[in-house]
Image (cartoon, rainbow, N blue to C red):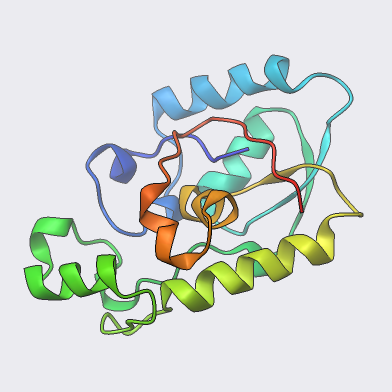
Length: 160
């Protein structure tokens, strides 16, 4: 399950998953409660505020796993793409090993997330995560990370 929308998500800012849900996000997350069914009421969740609020709104009991934390974008956190040097943004989109923002490379992020999910796969069949974490799980390798689009408050099935 992907965390519901936050105000920074709506305005396209790096690191928006660390903020709380906006009104629409809270409504969308509450609707997930009926979509996931009674059999899936326990989850492992990432540590971001929006992720935890999504789990609560969907009436899911949860355990936080910091290994499911979203991509660390370093000094870009809180900025919009327009506030980033276009050359740096271009490198980030085309070189999965690039860390010029001072955070985590896409290569390292995808590997970290997949390891964390494999470790938890038997313990909990459901996870609630930030959008970039869902992208990391759904992409066909780190080079394809940016080809995957996920909507806030959506559900996906991942086979590990």
